[in-house]
Length: 357
Ligand code: 5MM
Image (tube, rainbow, N blue to C red; front, side, top):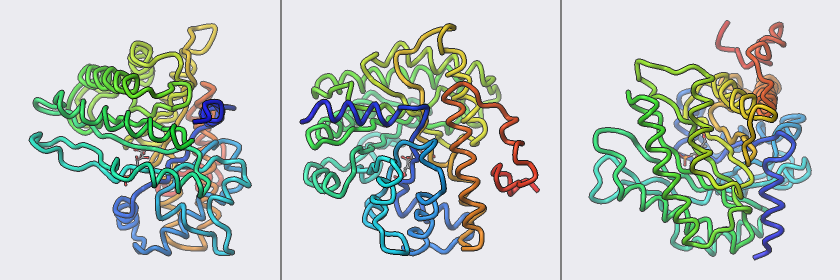
């Protein structure tokens, strides 16, 4: 393991107020999103859409790394350039999702464990050869009556840690993603307690497996009330609850925390990330890690809706993606405001507001 190379990559992923573009939807998830947008679900439409994303002009101003899926890392642009080469040429670090999905956890109704450890060492080696320099593995933790169970938390934490150790052995920076889901009517305190417990277990297992914290990125959920909870805290309350929870649970050696969006509206995700950075940046307070983003839906949704599978909409869709990326870069500085959504009001597509008018 080249420790310095891992540290350099991890630091580069959260440098310069940039963040990650999560575009690692499995075919099942991608097809589901395409179906909802009325787009044909074929390998060619998936390729074409991913080409649109990675060839967005100036995306590298805001995006440090892009997380690809197994099908995507092997694909090329129309003119025959591998996606990995397009990213590298733009200065964007290629990453790869290496889990094979969350499956039902035996003996634990309603709970899942993420699989993919079998043969992982070999797959990581070949992804490195293809040009990936970081990887991602997502565990999902549901909240509900009597869940999460200790068994579910422990199984997922151990898998995340074994994945992370294998990644570092192969020269890939592990993005460790334990996601406490937003679904449900639970209050913010329930999410905070579960997130704390999950992070406590995850860092315990990372320690047991000898993972070098300086060479990894944490990708957690924000601390949020359930989607259908009657009480929805303000942006500032959520920012405060999230950072306070992370301060207690995440060692200072971790260089960066890159949040998932989890189904939040894109503008809300930007506002909440911005509030965290504004409230906790010097001289107000200090956090030891970068507070960044690794969004999928919250950064892609407007672009996908505008594209709708039509070549003629490509450029407008790219503008919408760039716009959300720019908003999130501003959020990293604590400088995002809703006014940013109106700057290009004469071009509703630039603001990602196509469906509003
Ligand atoms: C892109 O979606 C990823 C999961 O895909 P599958 O469910 O198809 O495996 C997911 O891990 C994603 O990277 C993160 O959850 C962040 O996405 P959101 O939409 O939560 O920002």
